[in-house]
Image 1 (cartoon, rainbow, N blue to C red):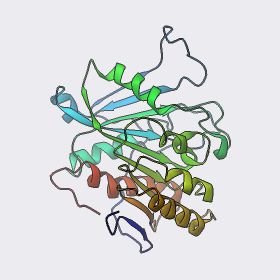
Image 2: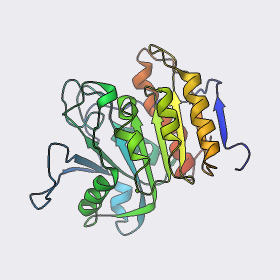
Image 3: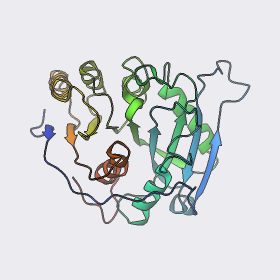
Image 4: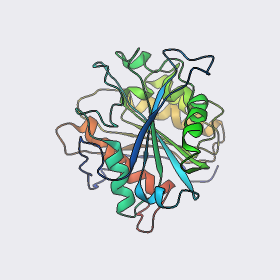
Length: 276
């Protein structure tokens, strides 16, 4: 394993926080998609998706573009597409648009599955989520509009998205779907999840960003098992647990744009990217 790939960043990182709006982005195109009647396995767990195409992506539709997949967390209100247009949440589409406009990342396609069932309890969220199947559905609906660079697929999950050790993001990283990177943002961080996230393919980067306010979790046990297990598997990708100090009243939500701004330029850099 290359030296320096496993590490724990305990120092605070001061980053500018993007100010996402609750309303849909004023530029670009968003559309929803779902499995059709022709899908024999269509069920309540046949996840719907929402895609966002920035104007820079639409301007060159035949140019392969990175794909960012965002999985939301707890959804007790049963609101479709949390963080992708729900009035009560910031909007990840605005965060991605801001990074593209600021030339911090190259133009990327953003997609998100959503769940309004079995989403009341973090550790049982996203049961049976099949990332490979969701990506296949996504590609079918994107193919007529844009081209996805399948070597540049980045999976992002916030909060409860990665709390279920038998489903959700934790299971998704062990699927056959090819992932360049996984960004886990302020999740439950149970010790067992640390070992399971380390089972991502050896070349896949896995970064866990967290903040300490308002939520006691076994940080040290999670970090130790995650890094030790990654080392035991001879992981070649970056494996990192990163503490971010967020000077915001709702640090759990405010960490999302900070983590995206910190890590997406590392994986899909734009002309003005600042690498971590």
